[in-house]
Length: 248
Ligand code: SF4
Ligand code: SF4
Image (cartoon, rainbow, N blue to C red):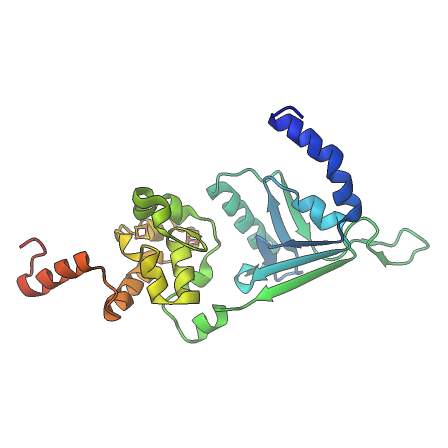
């Protein structure tokens, strides 16, 4: 095979596509959004094989957080398009899936699974979400996050420190908050919590109105209370308290 992109694509089409179309029985995806209106699942696809995978199989399983649920089909479309624009990708397909494939063309009988999946299963994950709202937790605002990443591209800490401002879930402030939710304050300090400059670019540019800068500020406060403030900053803190001047 020639070592170029077109040759690799050709090889894939000849060798794996038939297998995908005939032998794969179950597919697993997330969702960009799900509308309450009629349960339509929105799936954007810039590369990869989502539309093929969701149709060629017997069973399509969707696993996503409950925060992906929005009131209407129009809201779901807007969120999917925002994710596309801000991530600077081009969705070549957007799939709207409202249930299993269905036909009544044969003897007027309704049969499922003629062209696409016979079964569509949606698994909604709550995890931390309802608790965050009911207990008014400091990261409650994060429930509005649509994972568009625009706060990451404009984050001064991420631009200065790159992958050092990140958690095991991914890069930037939102993933550091996620680490806090699952693993507590110590984990976020190790992720570089104190690299945050407090510039507030994240809050100012968030299309969903998440006040990420405030969440990060609250995490810093909690870290300081727990005695996890980095020693250099501690030195400045003491100077501010004693001398009212960090540089004295
Ligand atoms: S916090 Fe806002 S800007 Fe950042 S990923 Fe979530 S929705 Fe996008
Ligand atoms: S406030 Fe912190 S997390 Fe938000 S953009 Fe600035 S440096 Fe990044």
